[in-house]
Length: 149
Length: 382
Image (cartoon, rainbow over all chains, first blue to last red; front, top):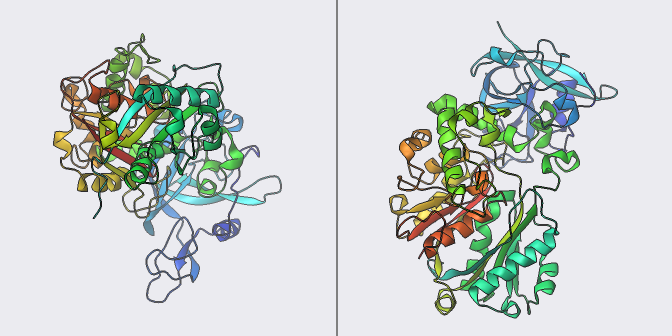
């Protein structure tokens, strides 16, 4: 990974997601009201279904399917232009299909953005999450995706 | 219940030249467009007491009002979400004029997007939510964000690049009739489209709008006053804004049905207050920052069913003489991209009978703002 790519700047609601990612866990915010339990993404202060401000972070299997993808070409920010064309995907989680995470399909956790030939990508392709420390001191961990055989 | 239906009208429109680079400042361009619109209406600047623009507009009401010589201003409003706010500026002024908060309202947009910076290059303002979930992965530009929905749309419904080309071509053909359009002398062919460079696959160069310097404005007064103005009134028949439940802005990736966007919400409100429906629309100006926004909007505003927006574009449907003549000045794709304001003024020209690609006897026009972000729309009638 090059460190000149943009890093996530977590907000208060999103911070737990990145803290769990740093431990190698893909967790999603869930309502903690006993009668509700609805998952929500992106994280937010209260549950849009029941209004509860109580929440927890539920572990997922880390397995997903490609919902869609783009292949950006320049003009781009310089660090991205260097690796373009690359893929950017939206992955729907097998455990919660309405939750879709943006990411990149790569050949290994720390491989370049363009390490997978875009011709190998298909909507519906099964993928699994991997975790890649990034930033000057590994301060934030990105969630990336490997194609499953 | 009180209604805005036909209570107000557009009495004047004005615009500057459109170009990749104009020498004057955004503030000067704003003033020129506004003065032109007031002159078109035959209304003195000192009578202006209402303003509306976009939150992204960098010239504020204070600067505009004192430059043009406005009097006491009693209503001013700014609408968010970039190009989603275009028609809402008219809606806010219509509400203000109809309820007596102002009597002469000016809506405007001035932008040097051709020679100025690209907003997506400013990472400092884009990294907070929801950017933390998307931008690190290289979804940097609106073209990347909309491209994601476009590919899913094509996959789900069988829409093709030829359908997107139909949109680009209709806009270019109208621009080729419009001397003010940036692409006036530049015809587009299918071969040019299919062999052009990618911006963000599946979107190519011609799926993306222009980058333009320019400004436009229009003047809104009561229907009664408009009948005494210099031009034939163009009535605001119905207006609407739309922010759907669980919508997420340009990265609308996290609800049950991401392909049914703000257009659907705005449309329900728009038609609820209208005396006519989609089949009675003679000409449409549909926000076209990217070609796939057009089939999505055709579905959202009820011109066809879910998934039929691509097929709707076939057989010259969007051309003059087709089922729904589209973006008759050339639109954002081929006239100028000024956050959709040129779609509003072109709608007015159609209903005045003065468009460079006039639809015979056009009496009703739908104008929409940006789909894929919290949006707005107006129905105009003569």
